[in-house]
Amino acid sequence: MVQFHLSSLELGLTFGLLGIFQLPIPFWGFLLERMKHGQILLICGALLCIGGMGLVGPYPFLPLSPSYKLTAIGLSVYGIGKGLSQTSSYVMLKREMDANVGETRLGSSFVATCQVAGIGIGGAVGAWGSGILFDAYGFPVSTCLVFAAFSTLVKSTVQRVLAFLDPDPNI
Image 1 (cartoon, one colour):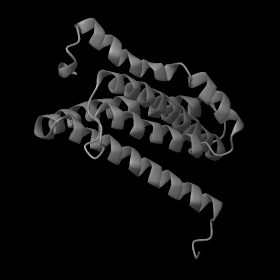
Image 2 (tube, rainbow, N blue to C red; image 1 turned 60 degrees about the horizontal axis):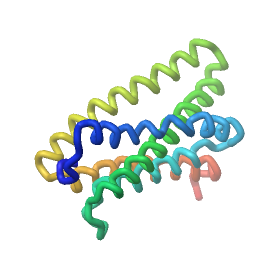
Image 3 (cartoon, helix red, strand yellow; image 1 turned 180 degrees about the vertical axis):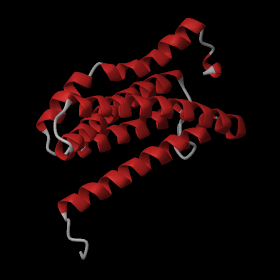
Image 4 (tube, helix red, strand yellow; image 1 turned 135 degrees about the horizontal axis):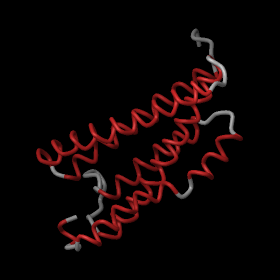
């Protein structure tokens, strides 16, 4: 962001765009309550995160030059994808708990605790790891870690959905 010569206020407002993910969360919850397979929205959220970070970097394999406008759009898209991913993963975990343990307050507390702990640990490890990658390789290359992480999430979720749709392991 140094190349854009932003003031501290402008820099703070720019990263505030990540908070945009909070706006559609009630809508994501509304959709998830009506969907049988929340994995579809988890995949969509992960793909938005991949695309958003690709614009922020941009990824070295994209023929794009860094720009403030591209970064702002990328942070917004990433923020929406992050909110969708977190909301759908919470709903999916809660459904699993309800199906296997039953609907209890303890189950809800456990799911919420897992969600918050996962976000906190991910934020700490992500910041630590990205700092090391940034120092070693620069920002565009370190964004590829986000690409790899969310690509792995998409792949494993698709495999789970396909296994659920076709439970016969012999096929």
